[in-house]
Image (cartoon, rainbow, N blue to C red; front, side, top):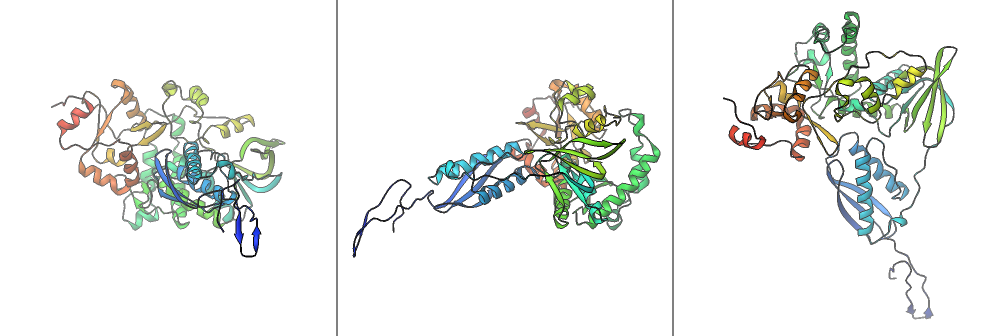
Amino acid sequence: MKIVTAGSMLMSLCSCGQSTEQPVQSSFTAGTYEVSETGINEFTLSFTFSEDALTDIEVIEENETFGTGKTAIEKLSAQALEYQTTNLDVISGATVTSAAFKRALNKAVEMAGGDASLLNGEVPQENYEDTECDLVVVGAGNAGMVAAVYAIENGMDVILLESTDLLGGTSMDAAYLVGGSTNLQKELDVDCTQEDVTNWLMTRTGETSDDLYDPEWNVKFSKGATETINWLIDQSVKLNKIDPSLSRAHVSSDYTVAGNAMLDGLSAKLEELNTDVRLGNKASELIVEDGKVTGVVVETFNGTYSIHAENVLLCTGGYFANQEMVKQYFTEFADLNLPSDARIGSDGSGMLMAQEAGAQLANMNEGNVFPFAVNVNGVEYNTPLGFIWMGGIAVNQEGQRFTDETAKYLTVSKEILKQTDAQAYVVFDQTTFNTASATSADQLNQLMINGLIEKYETLEELAELIRFRLIS
């Protein structure tokens, strides 16, 4: 039998006489097709088709962001294969990569001689009804995931809500976890105690409200940090190293930043516990009865429903993804339109929801600005802290070192804004680079891919690049 394309007919003769063979439709030319597209960075995927279906999608090469772009490719690939469709919704929290994936899929369909309309399956949307549980956790960043796992292990019936389509939140980008007297520090013979962490927290800089310098609270924080880090490691979160430049900083040799290690470890634990995780479910209102919060109203793609719970825990993060709130509260930097690494879920909705229910908001003017970052096509890339803590210096376009690079982030940021074009360069030698590479290899790779690190043999060559005169 010969295969013919849709709409054509083949007449054949056989020994028993003339007959008309029914036409056989072929949607695609079977084979594997590679497509490169650019999301946050360029990635290459292979799409395999049989004559009538999309059968496989593989990643050939990609450098998308951990937890967002990478996860979006995984989710969209699974949906395209299971439902045989190009009608894919954007993964909220990874819109750039989602759009690039859809372009790649459509290109592959064309290369296979097909038409996107042939892959028109529907991705089902889950419908939720009013329900109840012991605890509803709002926000599935690292804090929300920790809370959910801990509560389930202590016998509670938990529902974990997340407004975006991804776990991890802004905290997936946390460079390290602060703690003293942890089991890991003791195991590695690192001298950093709970008291050291408390003293660090109590160090006044003149940048933050006096409300934050509460000795009793900071002692509780230090004790809780120790317990939490020990618990996370017991939960198989791969925090296995102390940053050599900062004795209180717990990091991972397997991940670019500690937040990534937490995301992987905690999401695996949630799956192991068969947790009721509801992505794309945004808590929009607290249910208050007789002066007590008794649940939440939830918005989804298909409408709203209610969850009634004896306990409601808000883990919704900050507000830096909400420009209106930034202008209202973070006034000193609001007019600069600085890029933020806050994920889209950090929109202050949890704060506003609590305020609507009668909560008082405090210290809303407190925030942080990371000084050594650059924005490329809407994506922020941070300089590894090892560059700063282990010998790197910041210079302006006139070649002058203008600040103590190891000062508080806000202090350094303000000094950079005073410089020409509000810009600075971080200069470091090969030794510093090698040391930083030990804990920030992936981060350095992203910087180099985007041409943000330049290597020169002499200071004169470097000076020519950034157009400053050397100060002798």
